[in-house]
Structures are given as C-alpha cells and as structure tokens.
Length: 267
Image (cartoon, helix red, strand yellow):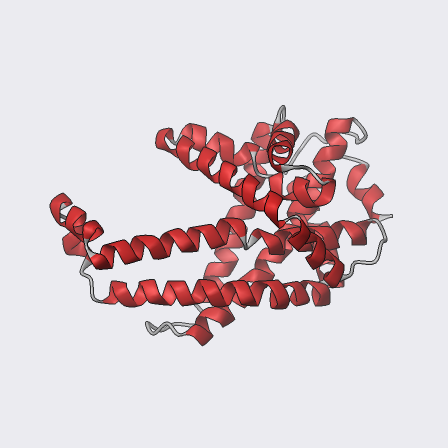
C-alpha cells in the first residue's frame, strides 16, 4: 500500500512533493468537489466581505492616514474605520476557522487513498463538518497563542511551527481541541528545524504559485465573479499542498514512532 511507502523511511520535502503530485492527480475530481461544495459557499461570504472593505478603502487616502498617528487614530474611530476593522476581523475568522474545513476534507481523502480505502468526497466533507466545533475551538486557541507570541516575533514563529499539524490531528486521529494542539507540538519536538524548513518551503511555493495565478487577471476593478474565480483556483492550488502536508504528517508520525529508517539529507 502507498501508506507503507510513506511510512517506511523519513521522507525529504521533495520526495513528499513527488508523492503528493500522484495522489493529487488521482483524486482531483474529489478535491474539486470539496472546493465546490465547501469552498464556494465560504468564498462567496469571504468575497462579499472583501469587496465591501475594498469599496470603503477606495475613498480613503491611506498615505495621508499612515503618515500621521493622530489621523490614524481618527480614522480607526470613524464609522468607516470601524467598519473596515469589523470586516477584516470577519475575514480573519473565516480564513482561520472555515477554510480549514477544506483542509480536513482533503486530508481525509488523501489518507483514505493511501490506505486503499474509498476516497469519497462526500464522506470526507461530512467528517470535516462533524469535527467543526473542535476545529473552531482549536483554531481560536492557536490563533491567540500565535498572534500573542508575535508581539515578540520569535515566540510567535515558534508557536506557528509547533501548531502546524493540529488541523490534521483533528481529522486524521480524532484529537480534541487541546489534544490536537499538544499532539502537533509533540510531532515537531526534536524535529523543529526540519519542520520549520518544510513549512517555509511549502508556504513560499504555495504563495508564489497563487500570486502568479492572481496576476494573470490584471485590473483594478474587483467584482464578485473575479473574486470567486480566483479563490476557487487558489483553493485547488492550496489542496495540492494540503496533500503534501498530509503525507508529511503521516511520515512524521512514523518517524516519532520509530518505524521509519533515517535519511541524511532532508532536502
């Protein structure tokens, strides 16, 4: 089984990407269904909020506001400023607590495929929604810890790496709110640098590819249709990296359990 190949030795990041490519292609139809049935409703809400915030921003000269602390304070306290703050809080909450539903469904599809179980998108989506309350609780704690740590920068980055796997722990190993966070930390412990390097590579590649796609659609006018189209495309791109992280997660579990062999070069 493919799961045995994932677990038999410690995989380098580019080996993970190679495996992810095959799994992604084999399950593309299921992944697209997840992006349609979970992603599009979330993206409609997200796009609506972003467009509202963008329309407010068009009438504001941010260069003037940011150049004077007193004007910045006046703007934040103004009706327009309060609306923008509320809109961006909503965007943040959607991205941290709802978008991971896609992650959980795709992670389940990936593991089912690797273990030669039926990789049904409908079952994966139902499982993701059934664990939604755990996700919300864990996401709230995770974001508070990470952003609280960001006050001193380095602690925030450490927390970000340590909590990198908590969403996968929820859906793949049925971990609870606090258990998923502690389990993620346990997987990183002793492998912090390797994990951090992988996180940076995954983030940079995902961001770069999505950025290139977004820039294929130039223009200043933001409409609901263009927002939805771009978000749908970037969701599918993100799903490839979710597949890769799922492989990374399963492989790291095997490493921590002492099942795998070792490799000299992580890259």
